[in-house]
Length: 120
Image 1 (cartoon, rainbow, N blue to C red):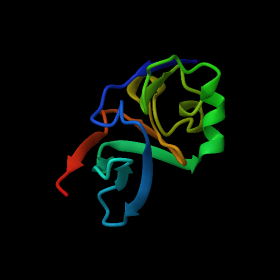
Image 2: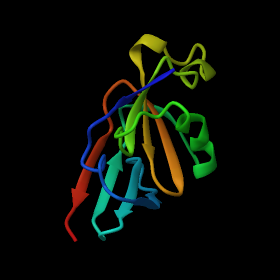
Image 3: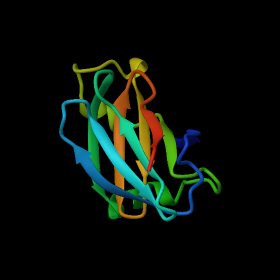
């Protein structure tokens, strides 16, 4: 398993926190930075399964996480994809991770999830 930097608008913030999941059928998650910037992650429509867990789950990545990779990365040769046999073809999906100080969002998707800054 290798981790590859996924450059996004939140990759290099000092600290990030998940604020909420917006239950509108679009698969939107809201994040906030230490400088009060607000971002949304859109996974609706083109993404497969996702898993959200607390920061303790991130320990599986800490031992292999390269310096400077940031909050967002892709897991190459992911075990998560294998948890859904017959549902998806491993070659068609990538394993995207959005990590914060308190939460880990892992997304299986054929397209890159959208992360954008919201006006405040």
